Amino acid sequence: MDLLNTLVDKGLRRELPTREEALAVLATSDDDLLDVVAAAGKVRRHWFGRRVKLNYLVNLKSGLCPEDCSYCSQRLGSKADILKYTWLKPDDASKAAAAGLAGGAKRVCLVASGRGPTDRDVDRVSDTIKAIKEQNEGVEVCACLGLLSDGQAERLRAAGADAYNHNLNTSESTYGDITTTHTYADRVETVNKAHAAGLSACSGLIAGMGESDEDLVDVVYSLRELDPDSVPVNFLIPFEGTPLAKEWNLTPQRCLRILAMVRFVCPDVEVRIAGGREVHLRSMQPLALNLANSIFLGDYLTSEGQAGKADLEMIADAGFEVEGTGEVTLPEHRAAAGAGICGSHEGAGCGPAEGAGCGSHEAGGRGSREAAGCGSHEAGGVCGSAAAPAAGTKAAGDPRTDLVAVRRRGAGTDLAPNA
Ligand code: SF4
Image (tube, rainbow, N blue to C red):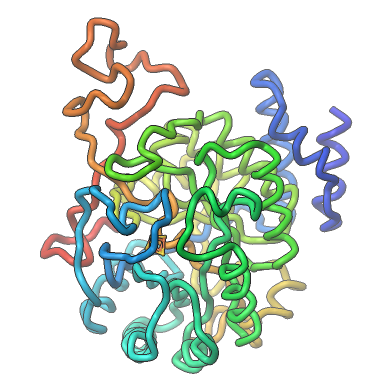
């Protein structure tokens, strides 16, 4: 296909595809899907080999947010039955981080709900970053605390943070439909503040919120313009108790096309599959490793992921390898220009960077709890109906509420984390 040859050539040269080319990737047929994956896979392997970077989320503060992001289980008025707790103590956060690092992660993403941190919150997180760095040599730390005020990014950087995550989530033209308590411009400003402070910027999107192909292309082009080192791609988990509970719009094939488009538009950037991986890609997760070079290990912020061991087995079975702490994630030109300064991930406190992966603050990572199997009829015939398909015969686009479970272990609980 001429389109794919053109996109591979451009990806290897870091040349921006046209909007029409990006839209054409999203419009490809199922018959062409493996060709699309193979083409984007060439670009992925050119810049990142067969390495998969593992990131580990630590939810420092969960729920009770005053903002109204529609996709978020922690939003104002959310009825989702998630864990709710205030700031973890630095030692507790460090213990949670250590579990992820022991499981193979090289980056810890420290996330807190809320519009943005107070200066006192930045002090707390700074103490947490120092504790994690002291107790886990070589770890990369990314903070994801919401909108930053002047000077806060610099203070996080001084405390040892390598990166800062703040997602654009969706296109500028639809942002107001998703959130009313802050603006798209607020988000752009925070990403720019992180950049300016020498932090590696991480900023991504959430797919599956009812957006058009044009919206998806718009937000990915805006991300390229912002030039983050990493782009987390979240697939919305539509959980009960939020306004987007009925937005089951994604199929595994659609997710693969979206990841391929992001790879073509942002070829040399760490593309991370974030929340919703298990729910929407399902058995196609290994194929997606040909497109993304980074995933989260274990659980998400408020929803459970597949077992950390299953993540590691999937990577090995698909012929990829977990990236070690001594390996530089980013291509040389990007690492050299990045926040890490040293261009190596070895040294505590340096590291080129890549962004965290916390989504917005949740991005598709929250879960509601639709019980496994049944317990809810929302899922369009998941159970309790004569018309319901038997397990194992669901169509690709059927709501899979059975795959969504609220996180009940790890940070904020007495139970061991999934790592
Ligand atoms: S995404 Fe962040 S700011 Fe928005 S409601 Fe959720 S926790 Fe609050």
